[in-house]
Length: 396
Ligand code: LMR
Image (tube, rainbow, N blue to C red; front, side, top):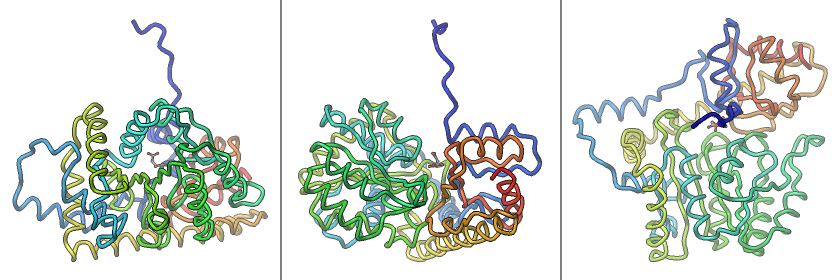
C-alpha cells in the first residue's frame, strides 16, 4: 500500500531540532527554532506559571471534555489582551474567539473556515514569511502567492513593493500580515506604514489575517498590539491568530487562539458556530491544562503583573543579546557593518548569510539557524555568544 509513498523533506524549522539533537558537537548552539532560552541556556518555566499551577494543584479537577471553542475564561482573556478589555469590539460582543492548538491551530481553523466561505480566494503572504504559512494555507486548499517584503540590499522593507502588491490584489484576497516582530526578518513596518496598509486593505476589499505570535517581544504588549487597534479603528472585520507559546514559555502546551472580529454580536455568533465545525472535524476540542494556566494568570491581577514583568525581562535580554552580537562580530573580525541586527525586533535576526554559509555554520561549527539565514537571537547567551560570533566570522 505504501510503496509509492515518497520521503517528505524535513520541516525547515522543526526538522533542525532533530538534526541538532543528533549532533555530537559539544559546542553546538540551536538558533534554529523560535524559542527563548535564559542566560544559562535553559528554557524558562515562568514563576507566574508555577504559581498558577501550584494554586491549581490545591484543588485538582477532573478532566472532562472542554467546550469545542475552549475555556470561556481563556477566550475572554484572549479578547481582552488582543482588543482591550474595555474596547468597543469586546464590549459589544462582536469578537468570536476560540482556544486553538497553538497559533498554528488558530491559523488552520481560520484557513479552513475561510476556504468554505470563499473557496476562490487567493492568499498572499509576505516574501519571506514564516516557513509554515505557505504550507498551511496550501494544505487548506488555497493558492498561495506572496507580496514583496524584505529588501536585502537595503536591509529593510520594500514597502512600496508591498503596497503595490496589495493594491493589485483582487477583492477578497486573504492577506496574511505579521502584526509585530516579523518572522523571519525581524523588520516591522512603521505605524505610518501600517496606516497605509490598513487604508489599502479597506479600499481594495482585502481580507486581513493578522498573525500575532510574538506580542510582548517587540516593544511591549500594548505597543505590539497597535496594528490590531488600527484595523479596528478603520471599521474592518478581520482575523487574528495569537499564541502564548513564546510569551508564557508554554511551547509544548499548545496554547493559542483565533479571534474573528465581526460586524456585530449576532454575526459573531454565526461565525463562532462555523469555527466550531472546523475544530470538531479536525481535533474535536482543545486540551485543558495550558489554557487553564493562562486563564488563571491573566485573571489574577498579581500573577498578571508578574507575567508582564517576566515577559519584559525576556524582551530586554533579547535586546541586550542583539547588541552583544553586533559587538562580538566586530571583535571577531567581521568587517561588514552588522549594526542592522539592533534595528531588527523580536526573536529573530535575518542575518543575510547565504544557504551555503548557514550549512557550513551547522556542519562545521554546530551553530544551527535556518537555511534562509534566520537566527533566533533569543537563544544567545553570555556563554555561547563568543563561540557563535567566532563561528559566523569564519563563514563570512
Ligand atoms: C519558529 O518560527 O521557529 C516558531 O514559530 C516555531 C515554529 O513552529 O516554527
